[in-house]
Amino acid sequence: METVGLGRTRLRVTPDAYGTCQFGREWGEVDERSAIESIHHARSLGVNIFDTARGYGFGTAERLLGRALAGEMDQVVTATKGGLRMDGDTLVRDSSPTWIRRGVEESLDALGIDHIDLYQVH
Image (cartoon, rainbow, N blue to C red; front, side, top):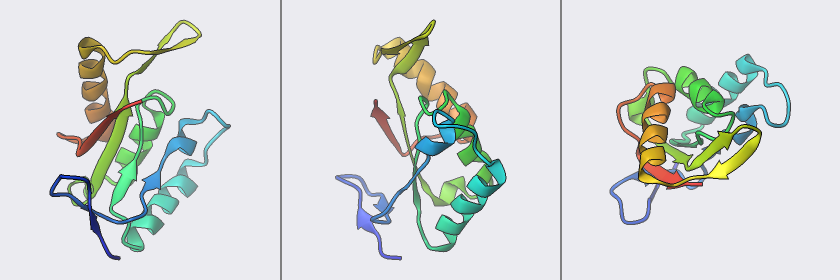
């Protein structure tokens, strides 16, 4: 599959990214086996950029993506987002340095990687 430059970075990505919002379970249960098969199918087609977020189930989608791509995370571009947190039942936008640092560390752990290629603020 063809790749294009990602902004001003040196990263080369497929024009289509695979998004994982649906794996956060906000819209219902997720068949994990089918989700992982879907991610593997995207890889087999050449997709190399995967978009996720801490806020997609507060780690649920990131953990699933990390499991699905274990052993090949260094071959894909990982895009994730932070800046959301729960305060009781209320969703809060928080892009303070403290919260972003915490979110990055939690995302790295959930994804099972040592760096994030593209970090965005939700």
